[in-house]
Structure formats: structure tokens, C-alpha cells
Length: 204
Length: 219
Image (cartoon, rainbow over all chains, first blue to last red; front, side, top):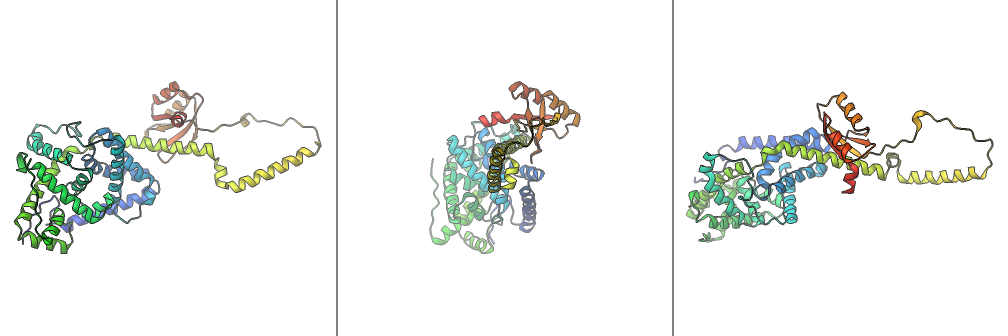
């Protein structure tokens, strides 16, 4: 049987990974219950779990570091203040990512930030010459191409390929129908491929 | 730049194209996965597309490593805790100014009724002549007018000792009038709520943060 998909989440061990995901969900739920009871230590634990994940998502939506950090903390502030409104209709991670997405859109609108520009301000420490040599061109080409997409297309594509979320969760995060997610990712993929068709490296 | 538009030949190809991004990483249902695999086995364009998506995923891992601002997590957490402390203190301050706690606990209808009864009683007392000359009432040393309104908040380090806390309060001529809030902030009443006093308090050992609520309110 033909099978090509080579994501970071291999289909060879779905049960093992599902177990890990379920454990993560259980931990999230337990933390949320304590946060509703205003347990600051539980909130700090949740914060430390989600800050890196949200940072990786929002870092591809927001160029300016100051705005990115503002959105990160505003998101978690909403989580703390509205923890009691979480109704378990979705996973905790989906609920938090949806808050982050809405907060980011508002911040981008407020600051009128047009597009992410990876050359504007580095988001992380210098990766070092070896990583630069290996990843630099590909990363720059990909970031430039992502920057050309609309916010909706870029967000849908990032959540799909970079965070490997199911389309149903992405629909909840972006507050849109499932078919809209599929269509957005299809068009974003097509546009990205066109943008990268002339680039050097793996994209040729 | 040449546009590489993917043609969509038929309904099945189109349906599979929409599902391809979630194929291969256990994110499709069993029936969806079977449908995709059956079509991809016969479709060179979808096979090429899947290979391209695999390269995209591989590249995305490098981008995520480079983009994550996780190195500043501790600093952001301290900032957020301070935001929580300020919000708590501001809320407490507002509640203190708007509705005394006893009013909140008894409820406004009760308070208004009690106020009406008190006015009636005062009117009756005023109408009657005094039965005896007024005597000087006793007043204890500690019975002066007490003002417990907070005008600042303070956050102590978890490692702060009692001696450090006492020293800080003395240095700032401050009284603790409330707290701790859920974020471990305490409400202060400063005799002199100015920049110099705040700076002096901030410089005390064991003190993490001091903010004026009056400045907060004025903002």
C-alpha cells in the first residue's frame, strides 16, 4: 500500500503518541480545574507548558518581538481570568490557541502590523554558523514565502504543517467551518509552492 | 516567478487534495485515510504533492526552532505575575472605594432600610429635650479615626524574611492594610505616596515590586 506522508508524527506509532497526547490533555484539564480555584502554582505550570508552544505559533504571525510578547501574556491573562468559562467542548490546547489567535489578530489590527518580516528583528538567539549553513537559505525562503500569504492562509498553514493539528481543531481555533480550513490550506499550499518554485535548495 | 498551479481533474482528486495535508500523521479518520491512500496510489500528482509536503514539514521544524522566544520565559512570567498583582490590587482598591465590604455582604436593600430607620431615630432624638447634661465621653488612645484605604501595593520575594518585611515597611513609613491577594501582593497605606518613597521601598531587601495605586488610577 502506498504511503508517503513523512510528518514528525509518524503513522507507525499512533497509539503511543495518542497515549502521550491523552496524558497531556489530562494534565491540562487537571491544571485548569486548579486554576479555576485560583491556584497560582497551577497557572505557572500551564504557563510554562504553553508559552513555548504559543510562541512558536505566534512567532510566525507577528514580526515585532514586543507585540509578540504582549500577545503571549495577554493570552495567558485571558486564560487566568476566564478559566471558569472553559466548558470542555474542545481540548484545553485548542481553547488556548483560539484565544491566542484572536488576541493576535486584535493586536495586529491595533498596531497595524502588515506582515511578518524575518529580517526585521531576530526572534531568537543566533543559531550559530553550522545551523545557518544547513537551514539558512531554506528557512529564509520559507519565511519570505509565508510572509506573502494572507493572515488567514498563513495561520491555517502553520497550524497544519508546523503544529500538525487536525482540521477540526484548526476550525475551532480560527472560528470557521471545517471546509473553510481545508480550502484555506489548499490555497495556501498552492500559493506557497508557487512562491517557492524558484528558490534554491530543497524547494527545486 | 512561475506559478505552479495544481490542476484538479475530478471530484475525487479534488476531495483528496483537500485532505492531503492531514494524511500520514494519524490525523485523518480511518475511512478518510483509506480514501486518500487509494487515490494517491494511482495519482502521480498527489504523490509529488505529498513529497513536497514532507519537505515543508521538515523545513518547518527548523523554522519553529529558530522562531520560538522561549529563552525569555522567566522574564515574561515575572511580568505576567506583576500584571496579575496590579489587577488584583486595583480591583481591591476600586471595591474598597465603591462599596465597603459590609455593604457588599449585607446588600444594598438592607443598608438603605437601615439608613432610613437611623434617620427616623435621629429625628425623634432631636425632638426630645436632653434628660441629662452631656458628659465628656472616654476616648482611648487607639480609637482615633482609622483610615485603611490602600494607596499602593507591594510584592515581597518568596525568600523575604520577616525582619526584611518589617524594615521595608519602616523605611517607607508604610502600613499593611490588606492582602495577600491571589498573586501574593499586599495592600499598603503610605503616609507619603510620592516617587521618592516608592523608590526607597523598591530598593529595600526582599521587595520585588512596589506600585502606587493612585498613579495606577490616574493613568
